[in-house]
Image 1 (cartoon, rainbow, N blue to C red):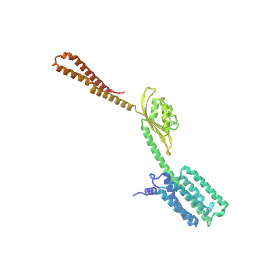
Image 2: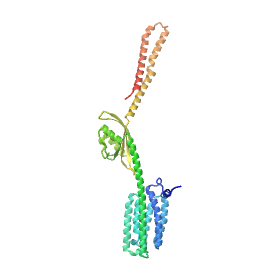
Image 3: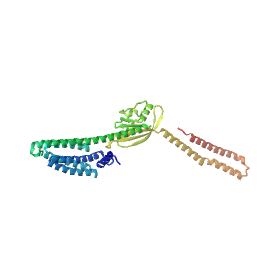
Image 4: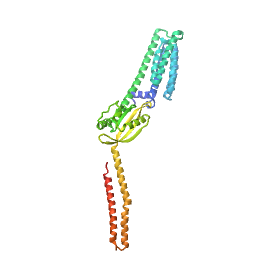
Length: 396
């Protein structure tokens, strides 16, 4: 059987949706809807307790609409329009509550403060300024109307005690609600931070275990990250020490800099480039490099830099060249065997046939021709032996 905490976790995921199924903003919105329903029930009970009938009616109507918003958000996965409708209903409900529940002497301004934080938490950054302007404008207009037309505001408190209870209750509920939301948001960020750090450690382990030279560059070719492979090679080959924020071009081979700049610019336009280059260094060492340029893209699909990787493939290239030379030697041997050796053998067979036809009488006359054919055959055999030894010993 599941432990109580596990049961709570399973129920929580069912109510707000799993992280695999919903984004953080969507899950937070679902959670806000659930908590809003709970708060509306508390406000409804409080209003009924102190006989605030108009406020109770508003809380009841908003509760019904909030239930619909939660249903469409959680089960129909309708968020953007849902949030806007929810915000509109909240503004209208707050306007009504302001006038029927004692205006600035009531708890409505506390709820305005609460709804602002909730809207900021569940909407994109570009919408935050909209909510700020709307909240400031709404409160200013309501307070101005209260001052100019105090008769618009209905005071339903029978005594100062009811007013104190209403304001204190609304304040405590708002405070608890905000704490719960912020705590949930903080826990989510902590989990994301742990996952990011774990992924970063794994990625760093992969980079550091690689013998390739790997460097991350920003759009201005400044070094953001490099592995030990890059640092060790530059120290051994060029006697240079690499560090972050340095321009990578000061570490490049002089014959490769202009080519690098061209490929780097192409990569910033989204192109992934792979190539092979042979470079000779001051110490006389020649190295074949397999080089890749890969664009680095952030969460909003912007290219923020380039991942540059260079792998030493000299040994592989040497093996390929050895195989190519061996294949050439074998092909030449096959050609000699199939074509060039055939001629001396044909000559020998022809001379033997002539000797037979003459009854072996003029053998001496044919011996020079026989000798030449045998010498030609011997030369071809020697050439095959030489090619075979060359193929066996091929090494660059």
